[in-house]
Image (tube, rainbow, N blue to C red; front, top):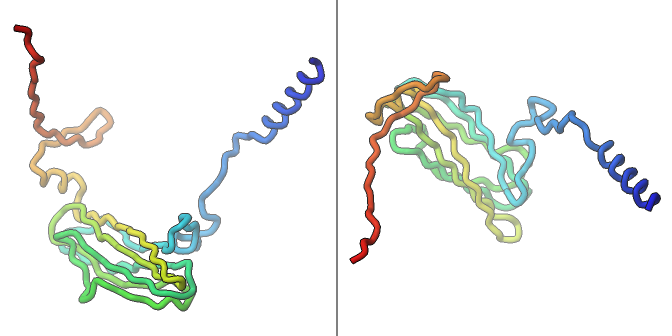
Length: 185
């Protein structure tokens, strides 16, 4: 019994030695390690990064660079851009095709903007056709804020109040209905 107890204490001690309170730093070590060059989600064929910096003012345009890095060295990459209604993109074509022949990111340059306050999304659909003829798809989106966030909420015609921490709360009307249970006859 004494041998089992000392073995258990030894194993617990070894397990606790491996624990520390330093944590694990998963942040990139260098600024150059962006989403286009860092971790790739398992099974995902495309990494995506962009340089959008918002918010924008109504009527303001911003040039945005969309960068796509593909894990395959051969095949084809197709990209489709779809903007929300009201979001203006500077593109005659919303569909792009690239032959996969380089490790460098594939770049699409766009100019985005909107005339009315609100939150808009630029949806990006990617598809990779690899050398075995298999397709892998991935979808990304960029949220584009135009104008003040509270102004776009107020545009929904709901009153806004602030809570005790100063955060905006939108009040919407509630409708309550009661259903009476079955009655005994």
